[in-house]
Length: 253
Image (tube, one colour):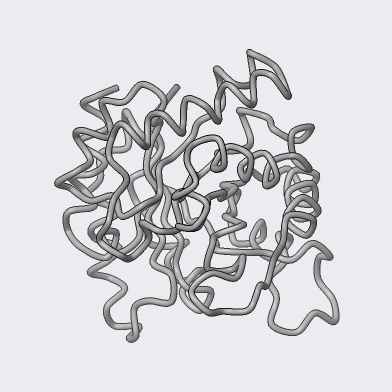
């Protein structure tokens, strides 16, 4: 499986003038052995889509499931395709209702969105993950929650079109990272779950990213784990070390 690393800028930066510096970090990445994508703020997507020079891709942070029309505040994949964009991220925990933000998506809307994305000929990064209170109950509880989040999309999982981003919610933006053992264990079990519910071929082919406070310091150890195929990077994607994260997993795989 070819590694894949994404940078989620979330609602950053605060100034249009800072984009070129951030894009320079993306363009410095060696994409020969690793797929790279960046998720800019919606206001910055169009600008960024014209500034990537190294084969990385722009991946918006969300889309609707109705297309263009009377849907205030939404983005349609038809608009993305017109900009030359072929990939979109959905299901991030911050949109599922974590961190005190009301839920803007649930498992049902996300399944509908994924079908809409794939029917439009685009690919998708689909985020899943558990909050702290579930993690504290143990791995079986975590996997039960992953099954809840995946059940409605098992039939849509195509390794050529869908990347799964596993994000332990308790490790996002907290500086707390799952140990490499915890991350590998969870990724391996998710892959096993997919083998049982979809097919062994799908499980073997699908890429599963780790998305819990990955940075240049912990990337080499995490990259050595056989079932970690990449990273969805938050805060560190706004820093020069993003290049090092891509280099670490490229070297490991």
